[in-house]
Every structure is written in structure tokens, then in C-alpha cells.
Image (cartoon, rainbow, N blue to C red; front, side):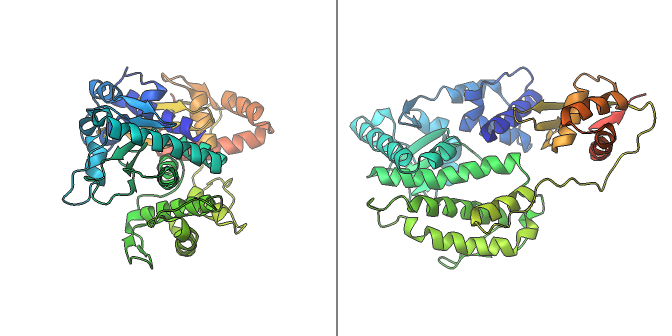
Amino acid sequence: MLVDERRTLYRLAADVLAPGTGLSDNLLDHPIVRYEIGRALAGHGGLEPALLHRAAGLRVRDAGVALAADPQAADLLEAPLRIIAPPGTSPRPLTEADGARFEAVVTIVTEGVRLFRQLAPEMAVDLLAHVSMLAVLRAETSGGVVSASSRYVPGIVLIDEPSTPMEVAEALVHEGAHEKFFDLAITREFLDVYAEDVEYFENSWSHARWPLEQTFAAWHAYSCLAQFSTVCQGQHLGPISLLPKARERADEIGRWLLEHEHDLRADARWLLHAMSGDGGAPDRSGVDTSVTSEVREGDRFRVVPGIRFRRAASGRVVVARAGQPPEVFWLGVEAGWLVDRLGHDGLVQSFDAVAAKAAADWQVDPSTAEARLRIALGPLIANLIVERAS
């Protein structure tokens, strides 16, 4: 469901940025395609379909995950390599051009993925769904990077040249957790625009200070690593493995987040409590009734011209408003249902007709359906997504 919602968002964004692009699921999962769409949504240039298809031509090997193998990988993956590079370094991936050295890496990565699936099958299915590509860095160029990923180029994991399958398995847990968090952050109510201004967290082991988003991402990764560590008895861990420290660090970060949960949005608070195991996960079913709409007899409504939207398989609806750059955002369940029901192309429908359909779909009495629709209409009208039709 989460992957489908992510694809729905990117597909809508691509449709708005470059109409007629028609990206497949495989292209929508490609890290460089997602990077280019993200850049365009942030206002850093347009979207060039030719560039997307060129990036998608990057040759990979099947190692249980798609492993970058193309001799041109350093060029095609320039963005993530640049973003994760420590100062003064220029990481370069191993590719098929490296012959036997690359083949040895393919073997270790394949065994690492197999080991992950063997030790923690449910976690592997969950996290690897968010890893579209893996690239292995040449040890002499990695600059000490053990593993890395970036929210700016989501979907790709970069790891230092491994010596054991266990190193690969741990890296996939660590970075796979980050990749899932990136997907949650763009499809759920996690953080708002004020998150950058709240208090920073300072950890006890390195005294690094992290903003709220990085703190939550670290907590999520350490929590996954702590869970994975419980099934790793008997496995040889390297000297820099985080598994022995994961539970202690997850608990430390989690305590701080619980003290600052008022700075998190509803879905982040729910996940924090659910994974902390304190039994106090807040209810996410509440509806904001602060803005409602007065409906007069005979009122008819339509989606505002220029608004684009797509419905995910889950029923959730993502909306885009044209602009430079365009705005893209998710609607609540009932607001999404209403927009989807009103439809595209300026179709006008009466409130009574929509309310009758809502009562049937939601299996509630007509008066309850009307009340819930008035609540849904309020913010839709206030935010110029839906309007009364003359």
C-alpha cells in the first residue's frame, strides 16, 4: 500500500510537470527519476523526460536487489554519490568494468540479501520494498562511508565494499529503514513546515545535534536494527557493527521524541508509540471539525479548474495545483472521497446527489453523511480545491 501511494504521488507530479510522460512503475521507482521529479517539485528546473529514460537505462545485476553494474554508473549516479561524499572525497562505484573484483562483490551482496531474508523474513519483505537499487563503493574512494542513503535521491542505498554477507544484511536494515521513512514522510502526516525550527536532539555517544527529521529517521533506523539484532545470535559482527548498540540508542532517542511528540504530526506520533511498545498509540481516526461549510438547498459543487488529482489503490487521494513549482499534497479520507466523486473536467454535481452516494458508500444514514460532507467541504473550499458552481 505504501509503495503504491508513493508511486501515485510521483505519477501525478510527473503528469503535472511533463504532461504525457507516462512513466511505468519501474521508472517511478528509479532513484534518479525520483530525484529529478523532486528537484522539479522544489522549483529547481523542469522535468526532462529524455533524462529520465537515460537514467533508467543504467544496467544492473540481480543480486536479490538491483545492483548497479553499468560502467557509466559514476556518471548516471552522480547526484547520490555527490550528496553522500565526505568532504574531500569522490566516491566511485564498483561496476562490471572491474571484472573479478565486481563479481566477488556480487556474490557477497547476493549472500547478504539471502541472509537478511533468512534471519528476518518479514522485515526483509517490508524494508526491501523501499530499496530500488544498491551501489557498492570502491573501498579506496568511500572516505569511510559504511552505508548511506539520502532523502534527496530516495530508493538507492550505497555501501562500502563489503567483506562479509552480514555487513550487507546490516546495511540493508539500516538504510532500508531510512528508505521506508522517506516514503512515509511524503505520504503520511509526519512533519510540517515548522519541524526545522524546533529544538535539536543531541546524542550521548558523539554529541552530534540533529534536527527533528533526522532524529526521527535515526530512531526509526536504530529501532529496526535493534529488532534485527535479536535474530542475529551466532552471526559474526564486524568491529563497527551498530547492532550491539542499537537498542540502547533507539531507547535514548525514543525517550527524547516522546518528550517532544507535540512537534510531530498524527502519523509520526502513532508510529512512535506503536514501535516503542508502550501501548499508548494515539487514535488517528479523529476528524478536524474546525472548518465546516454551509450548504444551501440546491448547492452544486465541482473541483476547481486546474486542480489535478489521483486516487491510490488504498482510496487515498493526492492533489496537485499547477504553479512554479506546483503544489502536491494528500487529502484526508473523506475529503479525498469527495474530490474523487466530483471527478475531473469540471463535472458539476449537486450536494444532494453526492450525499446520497456517500451514505451508500460509507453505510451511514443520510444525515450523518451530510454532516461529514460539510466537514470535508470546509477545508476543500477554503484551500480552493472545490468550489460552488453557478
